[in-house]
Length: 478
Image 1 (cartoon, rainbow, N blue to C red):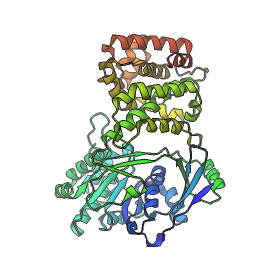
Image 2: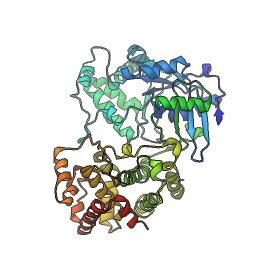
Image 3: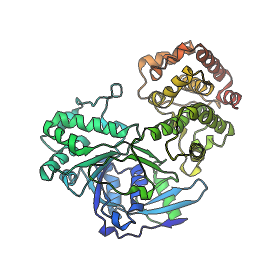
Image 4: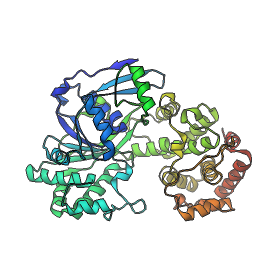
């Protein structure tokens, strides 16, 4: 195994970035790029100060502090060859539960010019139906009063910016690194709504001094179990309390809209652009949609790991036909992107044994995934009179998955749909399989307006019930 150590003097690195949410993805993605960049002598003001705000963060804080904030990142190659990177770009680590004042003062520190975030989609506190910031949340209400120690990320950032404004007035960029569409717009809506409700003077300053670029992030980074810690250390020969592992593919595209300068991340492979929309559409329509496409049929066929499903050539052909025939005509490739190479790489990534994903994770919360990954392109396909065979089969598979809860091998399973409504459940349980097409996830698609679609869906629903998902999938492979 190849071990790659950094060659800069970590003690001479200063923090120019404050990152909130020091989880596995951040440590495999942003830290990875920054660690490479810090080899450049003129970039050593861009070290990262990590901030953790949750009680549950205590373990990672203790483990990282015990080893001078350094850790190992194992990059698992699709060819079976792994590389271990020693990461030294995390230069400070503050736990807000232990020292909230240190968090606030660091945000106000003029040396910090970028705040980055990985706080998950739910961390932005936006209503799932309306997209509006939920000011009535109990902790939000407490922080809006601004009478004590903040308890939310919004309270901490607002207080830090207030002190920054009073201290030096220098601008700053808030850069979301969460895996959601137009994440910068999401962050802007959340933080500016909170600040407007708490401090109108600060809101005026934020409008003129804070930017919120959108970014697109991509790297499969599994959770690390205790068994993984032992396995990774055994392979690397290290004693690391907080190792991380990931796939060998990484992508980060950022809108170049920074208020107070930025690292030259392009030297480490980051792409800068005026608009991330084309990159987001490519990822949503090819990577995320393909994950959803393979998930329910594969699960019904009895597969429980994605790499295991990708050993079935029928599944591979099914996914590749979807990419080539259904999606490629609808997704313009971003500048300097080879779409054929991108699709080839996706198939290889899905099949990577070293970072095997759970099919059940891909099946989780389909109610939220279909409206984002599948339905927009399906509407276009129906209007254009395109072949909808594969997407129709997917929707019939999803219905079978939710209703019958038994796979082709006779194994029973539980489903996880946290946003499923009582009305949705009635539609799933209805005797008429076409009732399922009124599910909340399909709102706005009007799929029942296409007689051809409904007939094909009914046919697939009946065949999956009688024959199983595997034989039906095989029958539609070109």
